[in-house]
Image 1 (cartoon, rainbow, N blue to C red):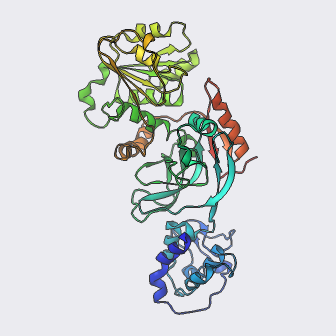
Image 2 (image 1 turned 90 degrees about the vertical axis):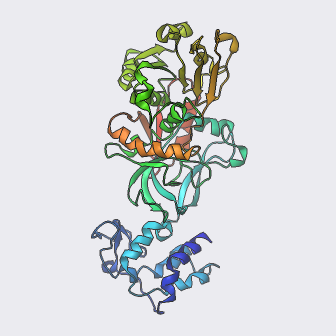
Image 3 (image 1 turned 135 degrees about the vertical axis):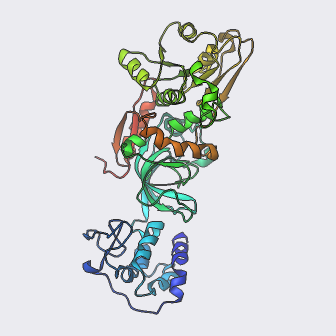
Length: 463
Protein backbone atom coordinates (compact mmCIF):
# COMPACT_ATOMS: atom_id res chain seq x y z
CA UNK A 1 0.00 0.00 0.00
CA UNK A 2 1.14 3.55 -0.69
CA UNK A 3 1.07 4.76 2.92
CA UNK A 4 2.91 1.64 4.06
CA UNK A 5 5.61 2.24 1.47
CA UNK A 6 6.06 5.86 2.49
CA UNK A 7 6.49 4.99 6.12
CA UNK A 8 8.80 2.08 5.39
CA UNK A 9 11.15 4.20 3.29
CA UNK A 10 11.19 7.02 5.83
CA UNK A 11 11.93 4.93 8.89
CA UNK A 12 13.68 1.77 7.68
CA UNK A 13 17.18 2.79 8.71
CA UNK A 14 16.04 4.02 12.11
CA UNK A 15 14.04 0.91 12.92
CA UNK A 16 17.01 -1.36 12.29
CA UNK A 17 19.02 0.29 15.07
CA UNK A 18 16.23 0.79 17.57
CA UNK A 19 15.56 -0.89 20.91
CA UNK A 20 12.04 -2.17 21.58
CA UNK A 21 10.18 0.02 24.09
CA UNK A 22 6.63 0.62 25.22
CA UNK A 23 5.34 4.06 24.23
CA UNK A 24 2.92 6.34 25.99
CA UNK A 25 0.37 8.85 24.76
CA UNK A 26 1.90 12.35 24.77
CA UNK A 27 0.73 14.90 27.28
CA UNK A 28 0.17 18.57 26.50
CA UNK A 29 3.57 19.46 27.88
CA UNK A 30 5.29 16.91 25.66
CA UNK A 31 3.75 18.02 22.39
CA UNK A 32 5.51 20.06 19.76
CA UNK A 33 4.79 22.10 16.68
CA UNK A 34 5.88 21.64 13.09
CA UNK A 35 5.36 24.94 11.26
CA UNK A 36 2.83 25.94 13.88
CA UNK A 37 0.75 22.73 13.72
CA UNK A 38 0.71 20.20 16.58
CA UNK A 39 2.61 17.07 15.60
CA UNK A 40 1.03 13.64 15.24
CA UNK A 41 -0.52 12.35 18.43
CA UNK A 42 -0.82 15.81 19.99
CA UNK A 43 -4.18 17.49 20.65
CA UNK A 44 -5.26 19.72 17.79
CA UNK A 45 -5.79 22.66 20.15
CA UNK A 46 -2.32 22.49 21.65
CA UNK A 47 -0.93 26.02 21.95
CA UNK A 48 2.71 25.51 21.02
CA UNK A 49 5.10 27.92 19.36
CA UNK A 50 7.98 26.67 17.19
CA UNK A 51 11.45 28.01 17.89
CA UNK A 52 11.76 28.61 14.16
CA UNK A 53 9.80 27.34 11.10
CA UNK A 54 10.17 23.60 10.82
CA UNK A 55 11.55 23.22 14.37
CA UNK A 56 9.75 21.68 17.33
CA UNK A 57 9.40 23.51 20.62
CA UNK A 58 10.06 20.40 22.71
CA UNK A 59 12.97 18.12 21.90
CA UNK A 60 11.21 15.09 23.38
CA UNK A 61 8.43 15.35 20.78
CA UNK A 62 10.07 12.74 18.61
CA UNK A 63 9.76 10.05 21.27
CA UNK A 64 6.04 10.60 21.71
CA UNK A 65 4.38 10.84 18.32
CA UNK A 66 5.27 7.38 17.05
CA UNK A 67 2.67 5.28 18.91
CA UNK A 68 -0.13 7.14 17.14
CA UNK A 69 1.11 6.52 13.59
CA UNK A 70 -0.41 3.07 13.01
CA UNK A 71 -3.42 3.86 15.17
CA UNK A 72 -4.19 6.91 13.04
CA UNK A 73 -3.62 5.31 9.63
CA UNK A 74 -5.44 2.09 10.55
CA UNK A 75 -8.35 2.64 12.87
CA UNK A 76 -8.11 -0.67 14.70
CA UNK A 77 -5.72 -3.55 15.05
CA UNK A 78 -7.98 -5.78 12.98
CA UNK A 79 -7.03 -3.99 9.78
CA UNK A 80 -5.17 -6.55 7.69
CA UNK A 81 -2.34 -4.09 6.98
CA UNK A 82 -1.76 -3.15 10.61
CA UNK A 83 0.51 -6.10 11.54
CA UNK A 84 2.93 -5.09 8.79
CA UNK A 85 3.19 -1.67 10.36
CA UNK A 86 3.73 -2.69 13.97
CA UNK A 87 7.48 -2.20 13.57
CA UNK A 88 6.92 1.55 13.35
CA UNK A 89 6.13 1.64 17.08
CA UNK A 90 9.66 0.35 17.71
CA UNK A 91 11.45 3.61 16.96
CA UNK A 92 14.33 5.10 18.96
CA UNK A 93 13.15 6.79 22.11
CA UNK A 94 15.19 9.91 21.46
CA UNK A 95 14.49 10.31 17.75
CA UNK A 96 15.50 13.86 16.78
CA UNK A 97 12.44 16.12 16.75
CA UNK A 98 13.75 18.10 13.78
CA UNK A 99 13.76 14.89 11.75
CA UNK A 100 10.15 14.25 12.69
CA UNK A 101 9.23 17.77 11.58
CA UNK A 102 11.17 17.33 8.38
CA UNK A 103 9.42 14.06 7.60
CA UNK A 104 6.08 15.59 8.41
CA UNK A 105 6.76 18.49 6.05
CA UNK A 106 7.91 16.14 3.30
CA UNK A 107 5.15 13.52 3.29
CA UNK A 108 1.41 13.96 3.87
CA UNK A 109 1.49 10.53 5.56
CA UNK A 110 2.74 12.35 8.65
CA UNK A 111 -0.25 14.68 8.70
CA UNK A 112 -3.37 13.67 10.58
CA UNK A 113 -5.49 14.52 7.51
CA UNK A 114 -5.36 11.58 5.09
CA UNK A 115 -8.32 12.27 2.77
CA UNK A 116 -9.79 15.25 0.99
CA UNK A 117 -12.99 16.51 -0.62
CA UNK A 118 -13.10 16.86 -4.40
CA UNK A 119 -15.77 17.78 -6.96
CA UNK A 120 -16.01 15.33 -9.84
CA UNK A 121 -17.93 14.92 -13.12
CA UNK A 122 -18.85 11.24 -13.37
CA UNK A 123 -19.78 11.48 -17.05
CA UNK A 124 -20.61 14.20 -19.60
CA UNK A 125 -23.99 15.78 -19.10
CA UNK A 126 -24.04 15.20 -15.37
CA UNK A 127 -23.44 17.84 -12.66
CA UNK A 128 -20.39 17.92 -10.44
CA UNK A 129 -20.78 15.92 -7.24
CA UNK A 130 -18.73 15.79 -4.05
CA UNK A 131 -16.50 12.80 -3.30
CA UNK A 132 -13.81 11.91 -0.77
CA UNK A 133 -10.49 10.74 -2.12
CA UNK A 134 -6.93 10.23 -0.82
CA UNK A 135 -4.43 13.04 -0.53
CA UNK A 136 -1.62 12.20 -2.99
CA UNK A 137 2.09 12.09 -2.20
CA UNK A 138 4.49 14.11 -4.37
CA UNK A 139 7.03 12.38 -6.55
CA UNK A 140 10.66 13.43 -6.51
CA UNK A 141 10.09 16.50 -8.72
CA UNK A 142 6.55 17.30 -7.68
CA UNK A 143 4.90 19.66 -5.23
CA UNK A 144 1.69 19.08 -3.29
CA UNK A 145 -0.31 22.30 -2.99
CA UNK A 146 -3.02 22.87 -0.41
CA UNK A 147 -5.56 24.78 -2.48
CA UNK A 148 -6.78 28.08 -1.11
CA UNK A 149 -8.33 29.28 -4.39
CA UNK A 150 -9.33 27.45 -7.59
CA UNK A 151 -10.58 29.31 -10.65
CA UNK A 152 -13.40 28.25 -12.97
CA UNK A 153 -13.34 28.85 -16.73
CA UNK A 154 -15.75 28.60 -19.70
CA UNK A 155 -14.16 25.33 -20.80
CA UNK A 156 -15.29 23.75 -17.52
CA UNK A 157 -18.87 24.12 -18.75
CA UNK A 158 -18.01 22.47 -22.09
CA UNK A 159 -16.35 19.59 -20.26
CA UNK A 160 -19.25 19.10 -17.86
CA UNK A 161 -22.13 19.49 -20.32
CA UNK A 162 -20.67 18.18 -23.58
CA UNK A 163 -17.63 16.11 -22.72
CA UNK A 164 -15.68 18.47 -24.97
CA UNK A 165 -11.90 18.85 -24.83
CA UNK A 166 -11.43 15.84 -22.52
CA UNK A 167 -11.29 12.28 -23.96
CA UNK A 168 -14.17 10.14 -22.73
CA UNK A 169 -11.77 7.69 -21.10
CA UNK A 170 -10.68 10.48 -18.70
CA UNK A 171 -14.10 10.42 -17.01
CA UNK A 172 -14.89 10.51 -14.11
CA UNK A 173 -13.06 13.84 -14.34
CA UNK A 174 -12.04 16.56 -11.88
CA UNK A 175 -11.92 19.94 -13.54
CA UNK A 176 -10.49 23.28 -12.38
CA UNK A 177 -7.11 24.46 -13.69
CA UNK A 178 -6.41 27.77 -11.93
CA UNK A 179 -4.79 26.87 -8.60
CA UNK A 180 -3.35 29.03 -5.84
CA UNK A 181 -2.38 27.83 -2.39
CA UNK A 182 0.35 26.84 0.01
CA UNK A 183 3.07 24.25 -0.53
CA UNK A 184 2.08 21.34 1.71
CA UNK A 185 4.76 18.82 0.73
CA UNK A 186 7.64 18.56 -1.74
CA UNK A 187 9.51 15.78 -3.51
CA UNK A 188 13.06 15.01 -2.48
CA UNK A 189 14.57 16.70 -5.56
CA UNK A 190 12.61 19.97 -5.26
CA UNK A 191 14.75 22.98 -4.38
CA UNK A 192 12.91 26.02 -5.79
CA UNK A 193 10.06 26.03 -3.24
CA UNK A 194 9.58 24.82 0.32
CA UNK A 195 6.72 23.90 2.61
CA UNK A 196 4.73 27.01 3.51
CA UNK A 197 5.45 28.97 0.32
CA UNK A 198 2.48 30.63 -1.38
CA UNK A 199 2.34 29.45 -4.98
CA UNK A 200 0.10 29.41 -8.05
CA UNK A 201 0.06 26.95 -10.92
CA UNK A 202 -1.94 25.63 -13.84
CA UNK A 203 -3.31 22.23 -12.85
CA UNK A 204 -2.50 19.60 -15.47
CA UNK A 205 -5.73 17.62 -14.93
CA UNK A 206 -4.04 14.61 -16.49
CA UNK A 207 -5.13 12.59 -13.46
CA UNK A 208 -7.29 13.13 -10.41
CA UNK A 209 -4.20 13.90 -8.34
CA UNK A 210 -3.15 16.73 -10.69
CA UNK A 211 -6.59 18.34 -10.97
CA UNK A 212 -7.80 21.49 -9.25
CA UNK A 213 -11.29 21.30 -7.76
CA UNK A 214 -10.23 19.63 -4.53
CA UNK A 215 -8.33 20.46 -1.38
CA UNK A 216 -4.88 19.35 -2.59
CA UNK A 217 -3.27 19.28 -6.05
CA UNK A 218 -0.05 17.72 -7.30
CA UNK A 219 1.95 19.77 -9.78
CA UNK A 220 5.37 19.91 -11.37
CA UNK A 221 7.89 21.85 -9.29
CA UNK A 222 9.07 23.70 -12.40
CA UNK A 223 5.61 24.80 -13.59
CA UNK A 224 4.57 27.06 -10.74
CA UNK A 225 5.39 30.49 -9.41
CA UNK A 226 5.60 32.11 -6.01
CA UNK A 227 2.70 34.48 -5.41
CA UNK A 228 3.88 38.07 -4.90
CA UNK A 229 3.03 39.51 -1.49
CA UNK A 230 0.77 42.08 -3.16
CA UNK A 231 -1.65 39.40 -4.40
CA UNK A 232 -4.24 37.39 -2.50
CA UNK A 233 -4.77 33.71 -3.26
CA UNK A 234 -7.99 34.62 -5.05
CA UNK A 235 -6.31 37.22 -7.25
CA UNK A 236 -3.49 34.84 -8.09
CA UNK A 237 -6.01 32.17 -9.11
CA UNK A 238 -7.37 34.39 -11.89
CA UNK A 239 -4.13 34.05 -13.89
CA UNK A 240 -2.79 30.48 -14.32
CA UNK A 241 -4.97 29.48 -17.29
CA UNK A 242 -5.23 32.67 -19.33
CA UNK A 243 -1.69 33.98 -19.04
CA UNK A 244 0.11 30.74 -20.05
CA UNK A 245 -2.48 30.10 -22.77
CA UNK A 246 -1.95 33.48 -24.36
CA UNK A 247 1.82 33.44 -23.86
CA UNK A 248 1.87 30.18 -25.82
CA UNK A 249 -0.35 31.61 -28.56
CA UNK A 250 1.76 34.72 -28.97
CA UNK A 251 5.32 33.64 -28.26
CA UNK A 252 5.70 29.87 -28.69
CA UNK A 253 6.71 28.48 -32.08
CA UNK A 254 3.35 26.69 -32.32
CA UNK A 255 1.66 30.10 -32.33
CA UNK A 256 2.87 33.43 -33.63
CA UNK A 257 6.40 32.64 -32.46
CA UNK A 258 7.13 36.23 -31.45
CA UNK A 259 10.28 36.94 -29.38
CA UNK A 260 9.73 37.14 -25.63
CA UNK A 261 12.94 36.20 -23.86
CA UNK A 262 15.49 36.96 -26.58
CA UNK A 263 15.91 39.35 -29.53
CA UNK A 264 13.09 41.60 -28.35
CA UNK A 265 14.86 44.85 -29.25
CA UNK A 266 15.93 43.59 -32.66
CA UNK A 267 12.34 42.70 -33.54
CA UNK A 268 11.29 46.36 -33.39
CA UNK A 269 7.94 45.87 -31.69
CA UNK A 270 7.08 49.61 -31.72
CA UNK A 271 6.63 49.43 -35.49
CA UNK A 272 4.29 46.42 -35.29
CA UNK A 273 0.51 46.03 -34.92
CA UNK A 274 -1.41 43.20 -33.29
CA UNK A 275 -5.16 42.54 -33.34
CA UNK A 276 -6.74 40.87 -30.30
CA UNK A 277 -10.24 39.50 -30.78
CA UNK A 278 -12.21 38.90 -27.59
CA UNK A 279 -10.29 41.69 -25.91
CA UNK A 280 -12.88 42.00 -23.14
CA UNK A 281 -12.43 38.41 -21.97
CA UNK A 282 -9.86 37.55 -19.34
CA UNK A 283 -7.64 35.85 -21.91
CA UNK A 284 -8.09 38.86 -24.16
CA UNK A 285 -7.01 41.14 -21.33
CA UNK A 286 -3.99 38.92 -20.77
CA UNK A 287 -3.10 39.25 -24.46
CA UNK A 288 -3.38 43.03 -24.29
CA UNK A 289 -1.06 43.18 -21.28
CA UNK A 290 1.48 40.85 -22.90
CA UNK A 291 1.42 42.90 -26.09
CA UNK A 292 2.14 45.98 -23.99
CA UNK A 293 4.87 44.11 -22.12
CA UNK A 294 6.89 43.46 -25.28
CA UNK A 295 6.17 46.91 -26.71
CA UNK A 296 3.76 46.56 -29.65
CA UNK A 297 3.21 50.00 -31.16
CA UNK A 298 -0.45 49.39 -31.99
CA UNK A 299 -2.62 47.10 -29.91
CA UNK A 300 -6.12 46.86 -31.37
CA UNK A 301 -8.74 45.10 -29.25
CA UNK A 302 -12.17 43.99 -30.42
CA UNK A 303 -14.56 43.94 -27.46
CA UNK A 304 -17.87 45.17 -26.13
CA UNK A 305 -17.41 48.91 -26.02
CA UNK A 306 -18.71 51.29 -23.39
CA UNK A 307 -16.79 54.30 -22.09
CA UNK A 308 -15.96 52.39 -18.91
CA UNK A 309 -14.86 49.22 -20.72
CA UNK A 310 -12.83 51.15 -23.27
CA UNK A 311 -11.03 53.02 -20.50
CA UNK A 312 -10.22 49.76 -18.72
CA UNK A 313 -8.80 48.11 -21.83
CA UNK A 314 -6.70 51.16 -22.63
CA UNK A 315 -5.41 51.15 -19.08
CA UNK A 316 -4.25 47.58 -19.68
CA UNK A 317 -2.46 48.61 -22.86
CA UNK A 318 -4.89 48.71 -25.78
CA UNK A 319 -4.29 51.65 -28.10
CA UNK A 320 -7.48 51.06 -30.14
CA UNK A 321 -10.78 49.55 -28.95
CA UNK A 322 -13.25 48.45 -31.64
CA UNK A 323 -16.85 47.68 -30.74
CA UNK A 324 -17.58 44.05 -31.52
CA UNK A 325 -21.26 44.93 -31.96
CA UNK A 326 -20.53 47.28 -34.87
CA UNK A 327 -22.79 46.46 -37.86
CA UNK A 328 -19.80 46.79 -40.19
CA UNK A 329 -17.16 45.26 -37.92
CA UNK A 330 -14.88 43.89 -40.64
CA UNK A 331 -14.70 47.25 -42.37
CA UNK A 332 -14.17 49.09 -39.10
CA UNK A 333 -11.26 46.85 -38.14
CA UNK A 334 -9.58 47.42 -41.49
CA UNK A 335 -10.10 51.17 -41.23
CA UNK A 336 -8.34 51.14 -37.84
CA UNK A 337 -5.43 48.77 -38.52
CA UNK A 338 -4.98 49.20 -42.28
CA UNK A 339 -3.98 46.48 -44.74
CA UNK A 340 -0.64 45.51 -43.24
CA UNK A 341 -1.87 43.38 -40.35
CA UNK A 342 0.01 40.09 -40.03
CA UNK A 343 -0.48 39.26 -36.31
CA UNK A 344 -3.89 38.43 -34.85
CA UNK A 345 -5.01 36.46 -31.77
CA UNK A 346 -8.51 35.05 -31.17
CA UNK A 347 -9.21 34.46 -27.48
CA UNK A 348 -12.92 33.55 -27.46
CA UNK A 349 -15.30 31.33 -29.36
CA UNK A 350 -17.73 33.35 -31.47
CA UNK A 351 -19.96 30.55 -32.75
CA UNK A 352 -20.08 29.14 -36.28
CA UNK A 353 -17.20 30.23 -38.51
CA UNK A 354 -15.75 31.83 -35.40
CA UNK A 355 -12.40 32.59 -37.02
CA UNK A 356 -13.69 34.34 -40.13
CA UNK A 357 -13.37 37.80 -38.61
CA UNK A 358 -9.76 37.32 -37.57
CA UNK A 359 -8.63 35.90 -40.90
CA UNK A 360 -10.57 38.57 -42.78
CA UNK A 361 -8.69 41.29 -40.92
CA UNK A 362 -5.28 40.00 -42.08
CA UNK A 363 -3.39 41.75 -44.87
CA UNK A 364 -4.51 41.17 -48.45
CA UNK A 365 -0.99 41.41 -49.85
CA UNK A 366 1.24 40.01 -47.06
CA UNK A 367 0.86 36.58 -45.52
CA UNK A 368 -0.49 36.97 -42.00
CA UNK A 369 -1.29 34.60 -39.16
CA UNK A 370 -4.31 34.19 -36.90
CA UNK A 371 -3.60 32.17 -33.76
CA UNK A 372 -6.54 30.85 -31.76
CA UNK A 373 -6.94 29.28 -28.33
CA UNK A 374 -10.41 28.00 -29.23
CA UNK A 375 -11.56 25.72 -32.00
CA UNK A 376 -13.42 27.19 -34.97
CA UNK A 377 -13.70 27.41 -38.72
CA UNK A 378 -13.40 30.05 -41.43
CA UNK A 379 -15.99 31.03 -44.02
CA UNK A 380 -13.64 31.40 -46.99
CA UNK A 381 -16.28 33.32 -48.94
CA UNK A 382 -16.31 36.09 -46.38
CA UNK A 383 -12.61 36.85 -45.83
CA UNK A 384 -11.85 38.77 -48.99
CA UNK A 385 -8.83 38.42 -51.21
CA UNK A 386 -5.65 37.01 -49.65
CA UNK A 387 -3.11 37.16 -52.46
CA UNK A 388 -0.28 35.88 -50.27
CA UNK A 389 -2.52 33.43 -48.42
CA UNK A 390 -2.78 33.19 -44.64
CA UNK A 391 -2.00 30.88 -41.74
CA UNK A 392 -4.42 29.85 -39.01
CA UNK A 393 -3.05 27.98 -36.00
CA UNK A 394 -4.67 26.53 -32.92
CA UNK A 395 -2.49 26.43 -29.81
CA UNK A 396 -2.96 24.26 -26.74
CA UNK A 397 -3.24 26.47 -23.69
CA UNK A 398 -1.48 24.17 -21.24
CA UNK A 399 1.79 24.83 -19.46
CA UNK A 400 2.35 21.08 -19.50
CA UNK A 401 2.27 20.79 -23.29
CA UNK A 402 5.56 22.64 -23.73
CA UNK A 403 7.28 22.31 -20.31
CA UNK A 404 10.66 23.80 -21.29
CA UNK A 405 9.03 26.95 -22.67
CA UNK A 406 6.49 27.14 -19.84
CA UNK A 407 9.18 26.83 -17.20
CA UNK A 408 10.62 30.13 -18.43
CA UNK A 409 7.17 31.70 -18.38
CA UNK A 410 6.49 30.66 -14.78
CA UNK A 411 9.91 31.86 -13.67
CA UNK A 412 9.15 35.32 -15.10
CA UNK A 413 5.46 35.66 -14.24
CA UNK A 414 5.85 36.68 -10.55
CA UNK A 415 8.24 39.46 -11.60
CA UNK A 416 5.86 40.65 -14.32
CA UNK A 417 3.16 40.91 -11.66
CA UNK A 418 5.39 42.75 -9.20
CA UNK A 419 6.33 45.27 -11.91
CA UNK A 420 2.68 45.85 -12.80
CA UNK A 421 2.93 44.37 -16.31
CA UNK A 422 0.31 41.74 -15.47
CA UNK A 423 -2.62 42.51 -13.17
CA UNK A 424 -5.25 40.04 -11.90
CA UNK A 425 -8.81 39.97 -13.16
CA UNK A 426 -12.03 40.69 -11.29
CA UNK A 427 -13.76 37.72 -9.70
CA UNK A 428 -16.56 36.42 -7.51
CA UNK A 429 -15.98 33.85 -4.79
CA UNK A 430 -17.65 30.57 -3.88
CA UNK A 431 -17.04 29.47 -0.30
CA UNK A 432 -16.15 25.82 0.06
CA UNK A 433 -16.26 22.88 -2.31
CA UNK A 434 -20.02 23.31 -2.62
CA UNK A 435 -21.13 21.22 -5.60
CA UNK A 436 -24.47 22.97 -5.98
CA UNK A 437 -22.92 26.46 -5.95
CA UNK A 438 -20.16 25.46 -8.37
CA UNK A 439 -22.67 23.95 -10.79
CA UNK A 440 -24.71 27.16 -10.74
CA UNK A 441 -21.58 29.19 -11.46
CA UNK A 442 -20.57 26.94 -14.36
CA UNK A 443 -24.11 27.30 -15.75
CA UNK A 444 -23.43 31.01 -16.24
CA UNK A 445 -20.83 30.16 -18.89
CA UNK A 446 -23.66 29.03 -21.17
CA UNK A 447 -24.43 32.64 -22.03
CA UNK A 448 -22.71 34.66 -24.74
CA UNK A 449 -22.18 37.78 -22.67
CA UNK A 450 -19.30 38.59 -20.35
CA UNK A 451 -19.28 36.32 -17.30
CA UNK A 452 -17.23 37.08 -14.19
CA UNK A 453 -14.39 34.86 -13.08
CA UNK A 454 -15.48 32.49 -10.34
CA UNK A 455 -13.00 31.51 -7.64
CA UNK A 456 -13.73 28.55 -5.40
CA UNK A 457 -12.25 28.69 -1.90
CA UNK A 458 -11.85 24.98 -0.98
CA UNK A 459 -10.83 25.53 2.63
CA UNK A 460 -13.74 27.81 3.58
CA UNK A 461 -17.04 26.48 4.87
CA UNK A 462 -19.92 26.80 2.41
CA UNK A 463 -22.94 28.74 3.55
